[in-house]
Image 1 (cartoon, rainbow, N blue to C red):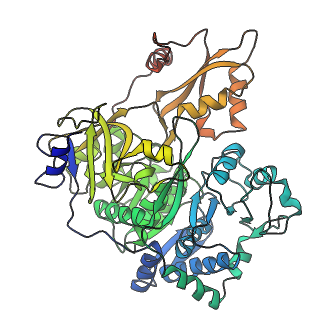
Image 2: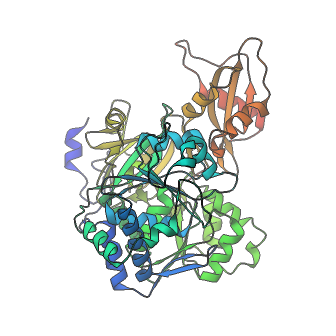
Image 3: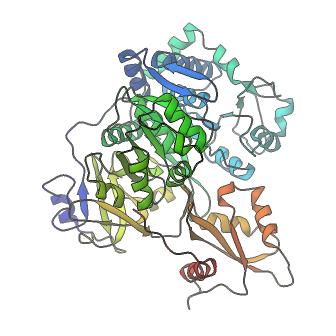
Length: 577
């Protein structure tokens, strides 16, 4: 490691140091030491009657004073149920008003909110709840094709005879409470509104008194991110992590009080929770949710009718809106900016968004869950060419270096692995010190992404050290899918990799060697997956082969498989920012 050059640093913040790919963000302002709850208090006091959030599909509109009151009422109800600082509470729901209340209620109590992907199926849910020891879970009845309450009942049949709050399930040994959304009654479960009703004035005062004792370095959120070894990892984030990232993101995108942010991205992800909800909380801007999940027409209507100034989305969302029948007639004149992130952003799409959606201040952001999430972001002051062709410059109070395989910082313009350190780096993977130590070394989070930094400090993400697939903003790790496919009785060998796709960026492809005498059809493999893993992980392409290309040392050569599939499908790598 080039210790001398790391210590010397660049004279101009944001520029590379001494010709090496090492950049440090500005430190013009101090980091915030406030908790999420204190920020909510501040904004509710500063602009109590301003719009905090709009959930169009529910007809819910709350001011900042109302959001604070409702969130604290939920916090009080949770405290009455026995939830306390450090307990883990899962939330399994699409974008609904209850999600936002849970975000701020748990932050008030010091309860750690565990974000559960709405696309998870039964096996993934079981793993997530047990991995971090959730004491409770808030669950919507279902979403799209997923029956959440049915999956919970299958995992914990003991719910049928349990008193709410006293669950003792063999497969979910630490889970005690299930809180369901909606008005229907389900055996063994609390209703969300009933928990809210427990929050009388005295209970609210007690909950707020807990909030005053919390510190900014307390863990407050766990988000699952898969790994190449298969099992998801619970990235644990603190108040300080996500509050300061939200502040920096808001600054870079020029978002402030009076602005209105359209949020079609999911709340379970940092994109919705930090870059969306929390960005509004630290600025006093309004958050507008078009629906429970993304739908291009609903998003366009929300922008027009709510006069949104900013819009977030992954590239596929912007493409869907540009191609929607409603686009030509949509009044998007209120739009000014927003963020495109989550997967490689096609340059031509960025240009269309800039020109046709009036988003002249649109920015690109890059990061990962483990870094709260944003490390690089373009600024509204950057020239358009920089904003459409790079992920911008390093965020304030963050350091980034690009290193070779030996950990030595590479020269400016050279490719290497991106590593970052600073306030944004997660506390660790919950209950997994070994995997934490693999990822975070000497304070540096090693991202696994290949990047290049130029002489002006702008960064390009040019590939991945490992095999991660990014499909429509969702990170998919081949090993996880491979391990599941091995559970199919006909599969002898399997390799999973990504192939380019014009709509989603990449699609999942599986090459399978069947066991001798075994038979299976492509749809058999896909059906096996659909019932057990999230829909975006299900291979679109399945090919049965006689052998897997290997090196002389027995390592699979995924690049050969990818190239062969690209020829077969007639696709090519696309130019991306």
